[in-house]
Structures are given as C-alpha cells and as structure tokens.
Image 1 (tube, rainbow, N blue to C red):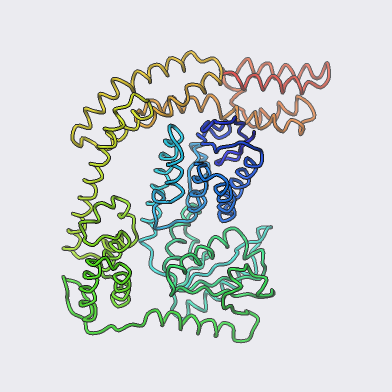
Image 2: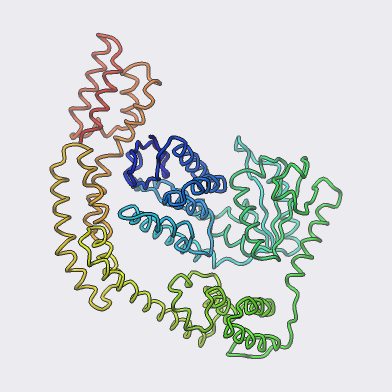
Length: 581
C-alpha cells in the first residue's frame, strides 16, 4: 500500500502493522495510521493533500470520518490536531529540514488538544515518542507566535478578501477592499487590511499579526465578487476562524459585502448573516454607520468616578463586583463568577485580578492556590497572560510566586514519572526517563539517576547501534538500526548525529534520482535521463565517492550511440545504486 508523506507528499510503501518509518524523499520520521484496506489509505492521502494545500476544514472532515470508523486510530487523531491548528510543514532550503508552521493559532495550547491527547492514548513506544517530540516543536512555535501577537495594538475592523486571481493579477475585491479601508481610516478606525498592514512583514511571520487582529477586531468585513473567491482556502481560513471567535464573543460581528453576485451564492455560513450590497447608492455611508453603532455599543459603559485600589485605577462600581466574584468562586458558582468578571472588564479592561479570576473560573478553582494543580498549561492561557501584563508591582509578585509554585509542582510530578519509567529495562522508557532527568537540571538526585541510566542502558545500546551502523552494507541494514537511534536521540545528542548520517545516506541525491526514475517515460533515451541527473545532482559527477557510478553513466551515453537506446539499462543501474550505501 502506498501512503503519501504528510510532510512532503512523497510515496511511502508500508506494510500492515507498521507504525513508524522514514520518508526517503524528505528524510522525516513518519508515523503511520492503521491501514487494512485501500479505501482507508485513499482517505488518509486525501486528508493529507487537503492539509498540505491549506484547506484545513476539509482535511479535518476527512480525518473525523476515519475516527468515526475507528476511534483508536492514533494517526487519525494526530492529523485532526494538525488540521485544527493549521499545521503545514515547509522545507527550510538552508538546512533541508521540514519545519511545522502554524496557520490557525489559538490561545489553547496544542498540548491540551483533545485529539492530540487521544493520539498519545492510542499510541505507544516510539510512535508515542514521535508525537511528543513533534508536539513540543509545535508548542514552541505556538508560544513564539503568541509572544509576537501580544505586542500588537488592537484593531476595530478586519477586512477579509482575496488579493490575487489564478493568474496572479490583483482582484476587483482587493481594489474595493482598499477603497473601504481608506474610508474607515479617515473616520479614525484602526483597520487590518493585509495589503497595507502586512506589507513590511516577512511571509512566514503573517500568522502572529493575523491572529492578533482576528482576536481584537470588533467587526470583520468579508468582501466578495465571486463565490470561488469567498471559498478560496486562505480567505475561508480567515472568516471561518472569525465565526468561531463569534461563538465565544457575542459582541463580535461579521458583515459580508457582495457585488455582482447573488447573496445566496455566498457560502452558507455567510449567506445567513446580514449583508451589504456594494452596488447600492450610499453603501459606504450605511456600512460606516453600521460599524459605528457596533463599536460604540461595545465601548459604552458606566465609567463612574475613579478611585485607587491596590495602586490601580478602578471605578467605584468595580470594587463591590470584585468582592462578589470571590464569593461566587468560593461557592463554586463559576458561571456567575465569569459573568461578573465580564462586567468588571467592560468597565475596566485592564483589571489584572479580573483576568486571573477568569482563569480560576476556567480551571474550576475556588482559591488562587488551587491553580497550582492545573500545571504549566495555564501560563499560556490568554487571561493569565493579560493578568500578568496588567498587574501592578504587588500583583506581579504574587503571580510570579504562583508561577514558581506551579513549576515546583510540575518538577515533582516529572521526577516521579521519570523514576517510574527508570524501573523498566525498556530502551524507550529509559531514554524518556533520562531525558526528563536532564530537563529537571539537578532537581533532587536527577543527575545521579541520569548517570546510572546512561551507564546501564543508554550507552551500551548506543555502542551496539554504532557497531551495526559501521558494518551496514545496504540501506535496509541501516533502516534496521534507525529505531534505536531515534529512541536514543531523545536523551543523547550523539545519537542525533547518527540519525542525520542515516538520513544523509538514504535521502538527498537518492531521493532526487528516485523521483527522476518515477518519471522515466518522460525521457526518450538514456542520454536525456543522464543529462537530467547531471542537472539535478551535479555533486555525483564531481564527487570522488561516486566516481565509478558517474563514469559508468557516461559510458552508457557512448554505448547508446553505437547500439541503440539504453534507457532501461540505465534505469536498472540507477535503481541498484540507490539501494547501496
């Protein structure tokens, strides 16, 4: 059965019950689904194709259908999580490493995603280890994007539209959107319009700014002159995310604006909303008046007389509300507590304590100290981030103490977990325990326990794996030792070096030649195929290592002149050479 690589899209031939392997085209470790028939393979390939194209909603729909048939398929759950967070893998041309990029950022950590947790639950061994490793990388990227987005000023309006058509030319939608943009700017609104707002940003850095704008904007305008423009992947990505935010924040409003099309031809999710016909006289004035009502309604509130409480400016109406919130929390009436938090924030949007109380509501904590049990995940909670951001000196000290208590509690749990793992002689468990002890950085006797694991299990296995590597004569022999190095790489940097060496020996030029062999029908003769190999793999003909192979290829160009087409012989020769080390 042929499965498409979820990173690069290359073909991977897999056998039943195989759960992990290496893509020979991009060199990335690949976790595999449970595959028992061709229909399921086709569904995974279709889902992976949609996700690589950026059509994350359709990809998610495919993976969810697979889960309906088999809820224990860890890979299907993993792919659901990737689609929900808009994860696409992009090749770094300087390192040839495939790096995850996030197109659907969320304040909710990837580590807490229900499908990611299900993937861990239904996987084991090295597959589970790979999920943990990939998730750590995604969470690091997520944190970096969130950090950038938090420095952005809030927007009033977000304009969603399609910038270019299939031929790369600017669309009418873009021109209409820009006209509206300047009208709103003249009225004093802060407007996110990607053509202008992102013009000084690097392409890979768009997501932090889009995420910040989507979350802060009170109104989204969706501009459309064609159904296919509104359904375009990245346009739909923006308005569907905003609709999801509207379900959580009822004060957000999405306004479709159409021209030269029937409003009922818009996507169903947009056609049910109040919309504006851009061909009507006075459209812009009506739109601006409507936006004004929405923004003014949101900004209204009883400002009251200001007093000083704990060194911060608050309204007189806020102080009793804060006391009521504490009473609601004490009684576990979290719904009322959250309602009062919102009332406080409507009057005082920078109230640090109100944001902290909202964290307590979401964690069902009656007292602040109970937040310790929630662990580090609350540190990524948007409300906790705001609580820290708006805190005065005294509040900041209290929050920093809370962070310290959380980290200490996490260290205790991690230490106990590693101690339990270290009781086993299993290599993967020993490597995981060793990795945790290294991360604990001297906590209790972590250093001594790490040294003992390295001495008894890790290093002996490493030396055995090295011996197999040094004596390997074929790619298949190298692949046998690959899982050992993958397990060891969790805690041993030298093992990662051997992984890179295996990748180097089994991919790069091999992957290029294999792709050319798949296209053999495009070449009329051996000379055309060899010329293409020279063009795409010049190192082979310049390297001493491949000297004999390059000489043999050149000989077949001469042979072909004398005895006729030798393409089939060259294809066989290249295939055999790719299988060697």
